[in-house]
Length: 193
Image 1 (cartoon, one colour):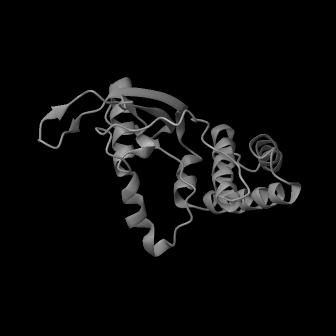
Image 2 (tube, rainbow, N blue to C red):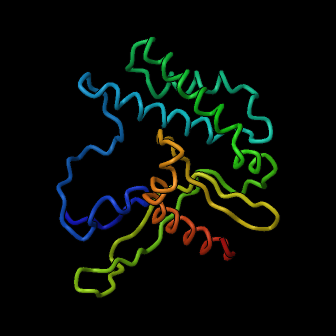
């Protein structure tokens, strides 16, 4: 089948102009004993994301343990209790670090405009012959749109474990996704992002 839409989180990973096989599985996570550590990492990221979807940035500690536990119970139901406990601890550690970050300090006073905001827009892609194509459509969910001092920002949560020395290089992988979300939010809000 020919790909007719792209998810911004996958930009840069694939050539969307090529035909691909559809395996019919779009569930996102499959758990097997062969890839249990990879799946635990994926589930850890999903749990952290679920908690950030509903957290009150001004009061992050409120019910945080219960929120993490509830998200783990839902996302990792197929895992053993010890693995669930490991995920809870990993998410707690991850979010504790985030709560101490400079960006989180800014979010505490931000005006939250939207969370998990669906976006869809035509996405111009250069074909191999240099001509513009508008066939693909980018669609996804903007994790967070917020405003500080009259300026609007978009954010997409990432849970990758990256050394500080590699952070800038690693972040480059997501720049195109950020561009899609910025364009979508700017278009919808009719504001500069």
